Image (cartoon, rainbow, N blue to C red):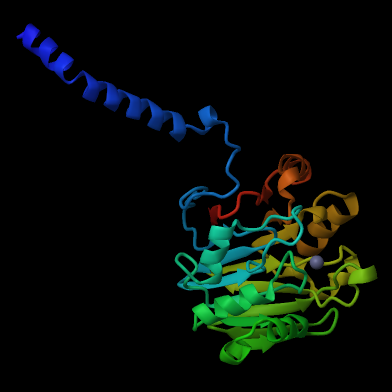
Length: 300
Ligand SMILES: [Zn+2]
């Protein structure tokens, strides 16, 4: 019997060796620590999902200041449709960018697209146009500058025009509206002064899933930019804040006194500085989160 087994193995030696080689090679390439590839900056689908009890809102980090908010069967995308602008800022790799621009799952259910301002690390007119074209139920609400850019640069603008709404309140003023069944407030917050003084920068308060979420684009950190809005009394649950709001003493005071969010999520963090910046943020706000892995998700 033993002899028979030995004979059998010898007879099929080449087959056995072949299977062993395939197994070893597969294991080698499946292990990132062996092949030496850098840590992924794009999460695969379920990564980062931490279901909290009673969580009602799912947030997906897209890139730079881009976030997708999902709750109660509604989805809002803010600053999530842009392309490579400066390599210093995060942008989706080509395949994922194509998926979102052509409204492929899981990006096929966005009801409302918001854009804080026209800078290309937040917005690309063709990306927006393509998304609207591929998802005929999606609406765009943004500043007149953003609307004008889409009209100028997206060749099929006429086919999506009916779903584009311009809303540009004056500085320190806000407008409330219900679009696609979603309650939003648009806050005109000045972009930094100097060469960006003419940029129409919009903040957004979005009410979804029983939560209030705040996104401020690239707002100037001056107190006078915020104090008219009394955000500290709004009961903001989640605030997406550019990381520079969390580092300096004056900016930290602004966040604590004039925004007072229950949860801070830092955005606009350069991929090359993710570790350093995240550590600095945690020093001042230990409970803050920092979005640095594209397509990671959080539940609230
Ligand atoms: Zn900007």
